[in-house]
Length: 316
Length: 272
Image (cartoon, rainbow over all chains, first blue to last red):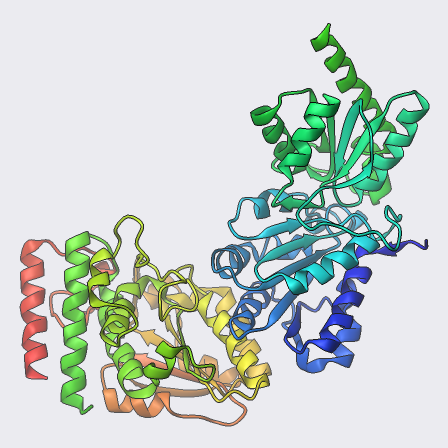
């Protein structure tokens, strides 16, 4: 399957659904190109709102539209929606439980050399700590399309974060997903690799590397960070006894901490958290940054060997 | 209602606010008093509260962008039957729906507010949604003048003009005082009406204690333009003890002050 970006996948599906449902609105922040929702602006101008470079207003306007019965997608770069407009997301969307879906694109480090202003490696942490709002990070275009369908059927706040570039396909075109549940990408019994977003593909590659060494690695796609499928996490802990988490996010407050807490409280096993360290990041393209900060398939496989050794040491 | 009845109503509400603030030690009494006459005009003379209570799709909408004056709104909502008056006694108490800032889920409150510069932009979104639905409802929002320093206010000012939100009236309680002093000391607003006009708004200035002038202003519509009503108001209106004193932004009256303010408000309520 050809590589497609999650933003294109989700926005083309939103447009398809909006043709059938006039309540579906998109609000943009001079970001229709970046979001890839320009087709909707042209085809359905009465369902499109251009707020200009004013993220705070865009999110508050989205909440106001939702209060008149619209299903509103507030779209823009994740770095701005999840930081500059954070108070609007907190108050106008999350606490007020308005039917607004924040579509944060070009997240993580996917803006590459644009530098620190354009990273969003904090958004899982900030969004997860708000009430009412779901936090979703699709792994590929197939899952992103399925998420779009879900968002239209679901009433309430959601934050969806995705990268910028075309991503490798993790799933077959006809794959189905249970929303709010972890997706098992690969079964395994020795160790579990839990990832979200683009890191799911890298985790699957790592599992292939480990298989060559005779290690059976389960791969879980925790595309819903909130509500999180704690049952799947605990089942992984019980059944495989060792876990590696991988995320394109700071190690503070994201997937790794979510899994660690769940495991600590429910079934303590060795866990290794892979993500971006608590420091200023170097500038570079995603692939170079992943390599530098230890987020490649090889790094994930190495982390799996480490937790397997810890698991063995605990049992000996 | 005639002017005398409106004044009596507004001063009865002020007395209720005084009771709530004094009893609980919570609230922003200065701004409550300055915006009370505007709230009474809206809820007794301008908006169809029966429709609002029933949640009719074409009911007018109101968002209190200056959310810290929640207790003023609560007394008006209770008196207009949005919830029982007894509920005012839960104000600021554990588990209440009547927080010091409006909380969504309370009848009559569509949007929780309190962080300044939020209610107005959300009101713009509401107005746009209604306008595109060709819904005849009108959206009102009430801001403070200190709130005008929020950047998001000016994002919304541009937005409302761009989309020609002629079903939106943004009211500014221009009492010239905020928590640290005068607005001109803290962040000068100068000719605020001229600023809105420069952004393409229809602008009306009038006294925020003149019911008939406000009624006319709130019912003014200019096709293709949002309307700003800049109300000239007195912070702490109703008792000389508080009037035009910045510290009464959120001072809690002691027992002697409470008695003095109460006597002033009672006198005004009886005079009508």
